Image (cartoon, rainbow, N blue to C red; front, top):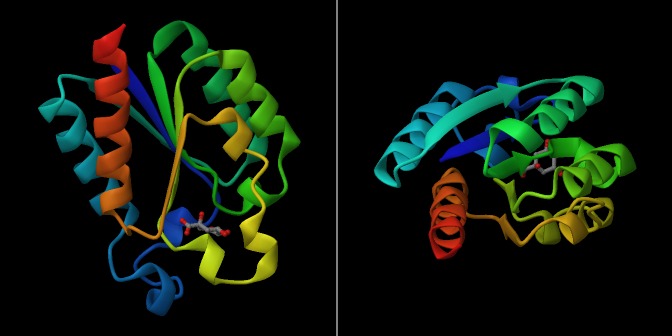
Length: 145
Ligand code: DQA
C-alpha cells in the first residue's frame, strides 16, 4: 500500500516558526517520522509540502489513482479552503487530518475546519506524534478492507 502525506503552507518553516506553539522539530523530522511509521506499517510513503493551494489539489487528485490513503496537515488552508476539502472528497480515499497544535485551544478562527467533514479522523495537539497516529490509523483501516 501507499500513503500520500501532505503538509500545507508555512510548515516548511517549522523549527524556527513560533517554536512556543509548534516546537523545535523541523519538516525534515516530520518526514523522517512519517517514512518510518509508514515502513513499520508496511506502507510506502509519498511526501509533499507546498505553500500553494493548487499544488496541494493536484497532488490529491493524483493520489486518487496512486495512493490508498491520505494524511494531511492543511495548515492555514484548513480554515479557508473549500477547494482542498472538495479534492479530498473527490479522491474518495480515507483521510486523516493532523494538526501539530491544539487548534481548539487557540484563536476562535482555528476551530473551524473545512477539511474535517472529508476526514475519517482528526488529530490535533499531539505534536509530531499526530503524524504517527495518523499513519497507524490509516494502516489499521486499510488492513480491514
Ligand atoms: C496547524 C494549525 C493551523 O491553524 C495553522 O494555520 C498552521 C498549523 C497545526 O499544525 O497546528 O499552519 O495546522
